Length: 400
Image (cartoon, rainbow, N blue to C red; front, top):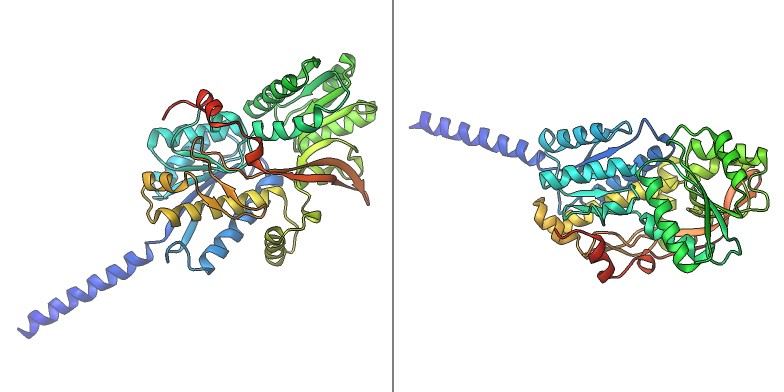
C-alpha cells in the first residue's frame, strides 16, 4: 500500500511539474514580419518601438496576467518570403496573430495569407488603400493612415496653391501607384482646372534620378507631387537641386517630413515642400511627452516615425488580446472592431466598417535649421477627419 502511495505521489509530482512547464508555455506569442534587411532606416527604429512596447506591457502584468512574446522575422522585401515567414510563425511557432510589414505589396501578400488561413493580421505600415478597401478582408486591420487619408490631408493644402500644371514622381509598385491615383483623384475633384502634364515611375530603390529630373523639367510643370522615399528621395533631391528643378515650383511630398527620410538630406533639404511627417522635437502633448521620455531613456536616441508605428502596433495588438480575453481569431476580430485606445498622438479607434485605425499624421513644410531638415508650420490631422463615410466605404470594400 505504501508502495502504491509512493507511485501515486510520484505521478502527481510529475503531473505538477508538467503543469508548471505548461504554465510557462502559456505566454501569448505574436508573430511580427518586416523588411529589416531592406529598409533599416525605418525598420530599426520600428523594432525599437515595438520592443519598448513589449517591455512596458510585461512590466504592467502582461496580457491578462500572461507574458507577451514577439517572434520576429525578416521578409527581405519579398512578398513570397513574407508569406513563408507568416506560415512558419503560424504553423511552427503557434502565434496568436500576425503583425507588421512595410511595403504595400508585402502587406497585401500577408493579408491574403491571413484571409486564406483565417489568421488575425494587424498591418503596421503598408499604406495602399487596397489593404482595407479593394482587397480588404475580415482578418486584416491597419494602423497607419492610408494613402487616401494622407492624400486628403495634403490636398487640403495643395488645392490652395495657384499651380495648374502638375507632374508626379513615384516608385513603380503598389504604394506609389496607389498614392498617385488617390492624390490625383482628390486633387482634381477640388481643382477641376488642374492639368497632369507628366508622370515618372522609377523602380523602387533603383531610381536613375538624372533622366527623371530631366523629363519632369521638360514637361515644365508648375508643381510636383513626389512619392519617393529613402535613398531614392536623397538621389532625387540632390539631382533636382543641382539642375534647379525645384526653383519656382511648388512640391507636395508624401512621407518626406518623417525623420528617417528627412534627416539624411541634411543641408540639401529643400525648403517649403508641403509634407506629411513627424516633428518629434516640437510636439508638446502629455501623451507624446511620455512616449518621448520612455524612448529616449531606453535608447538614448530620438524616435523616428517608425518608432511610433512599431510601438503602437504592439500596444494595439495587446489591447485587442486583452479585450478579447482569448487568442481565438473571431473573438479578437470582435474585440478589435470599434476598439478605442490611447496612442502618443492621442486616442485612436479601429473602425468596424473597414478595420482602418484613425491614427492621424502631421502636415507641414520643410525647412533647414542648423544644417538639418525640419518640419515647420505643422499641425496634426486626425485620421477620422479624412476618411470617407460608411456609404462610400461599402462601395470600395468587398463584403466579408
